[in-house]
Length: 354
Length: 258
Image 1 (cartoon, each protein chain N blue to C red):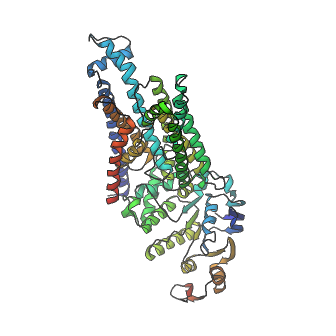
Image 2 (cartoon, chains in turn blue, purple):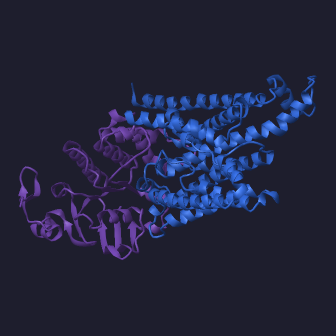
Image 3 (cartoon, chains in turn blue, red):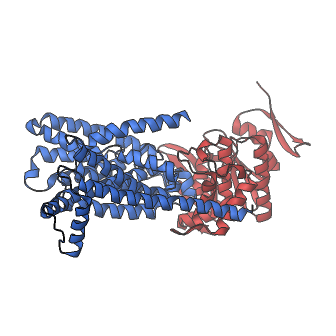
């Protein structure tokens, strides 16, 4: 076999492998959304869902079903915003995980490695404690501000201006993140301690939930997600090089400091907006990129789009289970940690045994 | 392309690593940098490659200053084989070698036929074609180094920087790759700047030697002239006997166990 045709075969194999996978995930996600829409306290026939969604697009409701109006309200005002927010958050957390794992050269990093979640939780706890939520939409806002402030402080701690390219080394970032997160969680404990009757509100918020999410929540996450995906795809190839080490990335023409900073901010913003909207949902950002890498390999140009879809499917699945399958809704953060944790242990153990 | 450094200084905090180094690495020659641990060899390569900025001084590649070049242009001029190559992500050997074409491939476009041919050729001349589909995380230290070496060749630059690039390689592959470098230097006028640990390999293969100690150049010149007992004693604090060896066809150093 000639060298050329051999190469071409390799290229084609890599290409055909991701095409069907992407398509399959899109179909699974669509099916998942439909199933999730129909499930719940009141189960709605899939056929009616089609009618109602179609009616939203075309304008007139053309079904004779006696419950049609109730169904339309449930779907459009309750379930759809929750489902879409959940899918978007799952996607955003997964992309964030891909970015952090690449930048920190560590397949075990996750969106919360730099303390973004602790910062958000601290901000939210303050808002809840001061009872600001009664006045305006301040809990998510405070959470977001807390997350951003944490990120900038962590970057400030680990940034050394003297060195040209190694200024934001992964070790420095991880260490700063751990230190800041430790301080913040002590702060959160203190807030809980002085919170009296609001302590349960804080605890519930921290555990994460998609209950009573609105269209506004969805649009906010979607805007950040769209921006984040564009930026990550733009720098996907640079991220491949960065994930192989700073010296080698620098010598291959990557503007290391600039790209690292941009991707760090992108990943943290994604995580921050997710935490602000839905509380702390662990393991999605760690597990999804990790599992998707088994299918796509480590190339971020494939990893990013597939992780986005897989993350949406996974988190939506988890949320549907807690909302419609379990007898009582348990906080999604607990569910993902209780199921994701053991799965992760299994993957980790298996990779050690090989 | 000549690499010229002038008045380079660098320090970590109060500790000076490099003191006012000036030196020209001319093209078509193999330059070896020798020196004890902590003499500033790796820092010097970091500064030449643009990974670290010096406190003072300037690096010129040919006629242009490194500071005024874009990272991409610099990467089309200079390739680096660094030491301690730890990888956590399972890219295949072919993918890693093809990354050498990164500075030439535009964003969102794909490597051309020529890029892929260069990668295949680089794998073939470094003897890693059989590892093409293996994951780099599963390779031995020496195989990994050859893979990174292939990537640097695939980058196809007039200047090659090697930081102890042979430290994990067996003698067979070391000699093979040194011969390959020598050929590139002679036939394509490349500039090779290599930090080496093995004095005798440096004596056999390099055209020019730079002895570095405490961040300063102690001796520099044609290998035949500066590879002396006196210089080895000054720089490494060991007694050595240096004589021409017929078999190696080069001056070699011998050390006594003491």
